[in-house]
Image 1 (spheres, rainbow, N blue to C red):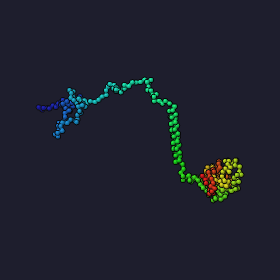
Image 2 (image 1 turned 180 degrees about the vertical axis):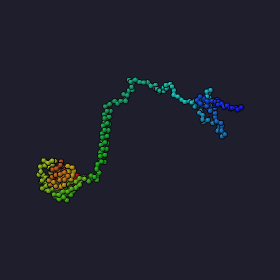
Image 3 (image 1 turned 180 degrees about the horizontal axis):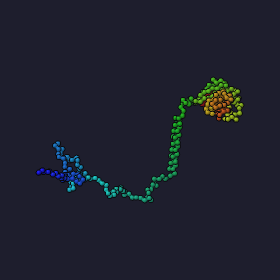
Image 4 (image 1 turned 30 degrees about the vertical axis):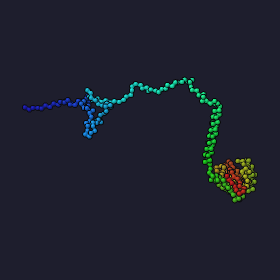
Length: 275
C-alpha cells in the first residue's frame, strides 16, 4: 500500500520584535556605551556618534527608545526693559535759566560791530572774486606773438598813384587805393545823402589820396574786383554789387559800404599802420 507525504505551509512568528510601523525594536541595545580603552594609553574616550548629555540623547523606557533634544525658546511673557532715570527736578516753563548776566549792556554797539564785520567781509569777498575773474580772463586773452601780428605796416612810397594794393590782415584782404585828384573830386561831387548807406568821402578817408578798406563784399563776403563796375570802383562778380571810387555801395544786393578798418599814418617813416 503506497504512502503519501503531506506538506503544510505555516507562518512562523518573527524572532525580532518590531513596531507597528515595521521598524525593528531592540530595547536591550545600549547606545551610550563608551568605547573600551585602547592599548596606547590614551584612556577611555567618548563615543563620537552619540550626543552629549547636556544636548539630550537616547534613553530607554518601557515603550522603547526615547530621543530628547534641548533648545531655547523665547519667553511667552512680555519683556519690558528697565529704563535709565535721573533724580533731577523737572522744571516748568516759567523756571527757565536767567541769562541776563551774559547779555551786553549796550546792544547798539554790538549791532554796529556786526554790520561792520558783515560789510567788510562782503567787500573783501567781492575784491577776491573780481581778482579771480580778471586772472581767468587774462589767461584767455591772446598771447604776445598773436598781438604782434594784429598790426600790419605798409610802405606808402611803393604804391604809385592811381593803383590798388591788396594785403592780408587778420586773415582778410585789405584794399589800399592811391587815388588821383580826379577820383577824389568825383567821390566828393556825388550826392551821398541819397545813397543806400549814406556816408561822405571825408568820413571814409583820413587823407583824400589814400583809401583803405576791407576787401570783403557786404552782401555775402566775396572779394570784389578793383577798377571795375559801373562807377569805376569795385565790382563783385558773385551777385553783381557795384561800389564807387570811395567804396560806397551804389548798385546790386550789397546793403552796406565796404568796411573801413582801424589804421593810422606814420609820417616819420612814411608807412601805413593797419590795426
